[in-house]
Length: 249
Ligand code: PEP
Image 1 (spheres, rainbow, N blue to C red):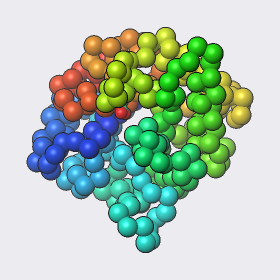
Image 2 (tube, helix red, strand yellow):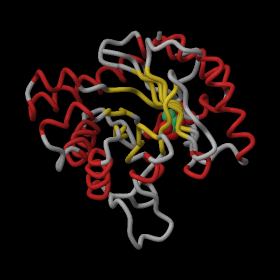
Image 3 (cartoon, protein in one colour):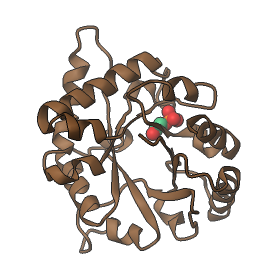
C-alpha cells in the first residue's frame, strides 16, 4: 500500500505570502518522486494562491455537506475541487471539540465522495483508559463516519487514527507509541473487516496523526498497519516535512 503524508497547516501561516513561500519550499524539496502520496492542506483562503505539483496534491481542511446554497461562511467540496483540491480532511478533533457531530461528519464524507474527492476522516479517543473503553469510542466514530458510504466507495476513504491526547496543540500531549498506533489501526481494520469483509478492509489506507515529526516518522511508518501520517505542526517547517516524506519513501 502506498504511503501518504498529509500536512495539516491548520490556521497557519498568517499571510498569503507566507503560505505561498511554504508551499513552494515543500514542492521544491519533494521534487518529482511519486513513491509516496504527499498532500498539503492550507487554510481555505490560501487554496487559490497555491498550486500543487505532480508530486504534491492539495488538500482542504474541511468542506460542507452541500454543493452550494445559503450556508454563510461555508465552503463546499465542489468549490475547493475547482481550486485543484483532491483530498479533504474531515472530523478533525479541533472541529469536533467545537461541536461538529458524527452525524455532520457522515454527511460531509458523502458530499466529498460525491464530488470526486478523497475524504481523510480523523477519528480518535480523547483519553486512553486501561479497560479498552477507548476502542468503543474509535469504533463509534468510525462506523458513524462510514454509515452513509456505499460499499463500493469504502476503499476510497482514508482513515486517520489521531488520538486527541497525542496532538501537539493539546496540553501535556505526547505521541502515541508506534505499537499503540499500530494496535489501534489494526482494530480499525478489523472493525472494517467485520462490517465490509476482509478484501475491502485490507484496501483501506489507515494513517496515524499526533505529534509526528522527522525524528519519529520512521518508527510509525515501520508499523505494518500504518500507511502514512497526518502531520500538524511539523508540516509548517518545509525542511522537516520533506524529511518525513523521505522517510515514507
Ligand atoms: C493534527 O492536529 O492533525 C496533528 C497531527 O497535529 P500535530 O502533528 O501538531 O500533533
